[in-house]
Image (cartoon, rainbow, N blue to C red; front, top):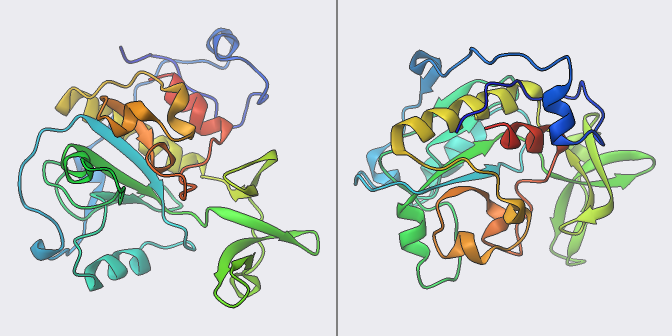
Amino acid sequence: MISLYKYSLGLLNDSTTYSQNLKNEEAELLVSKLNLNELIQVDFPEDQYFKEQTDKKQIVIHHTVSGQGTDGDIDWWRSTSDRIGTSIIIDWKGAMYQCFSTKYWSHHLGTHAPNNKALNMASIGVEIDAWGALIKFNNAWYPAKWDIVSKQNVPNIKAGAIKNVQEYPNGFRGFYGYEKYSDAQIESLRKLLIFWNEKFGITLNYNEDMWDLSTKALSGTPGVWTHVSYRTDKSDCHPQPELINMLKTL
């Protein structure tokens, strides 16, 4: 069932429980749904995805590991021959760019599981435009970059320091900071999830195990998952409190 309560966008203390959030005086009725005219159609070649209609059971949230702007990500997808990509990518301001219809499919999971193809066919991938994992250097946070010489992640100084940082004191997937998803991105994602629930009947119940490798996700259990649910070498998405609050109100 879809909740009629508005989730916190950083207005509430992160330690506030979900039940307390619902009782908070800031909770209000949701009236905003996805308007299909909000989707910006991308010129995306048909040979870059599989124009084959499949039944959808899962939704998988990713982030791009790139700076603000979706052009570079989409251009990279266009340049490959492996039909890698997601149906929709959400930019920093919440604009939703659609590469192809969600009734079709592409490779976006890349697991080594024997059912990898089936998982890709039965899932909808959505990307949030963000740098992802960060490394602290000289009291500032920079995007992580893999260095082939030292064979480790190093701070990408050229990319510039990131100001909107979600810190994880105990770490998450080997990193202690991540670029925060914007309120506008989380709101656009909410609209998409509700729309896909109504269109495909995909359950929106919150999966507590979505932030680590999940046997349920890998077995094709219907629901909303993240890329980390399928692979131990991925860190998208990270468990930002505002994102979790939104997912719990669906």
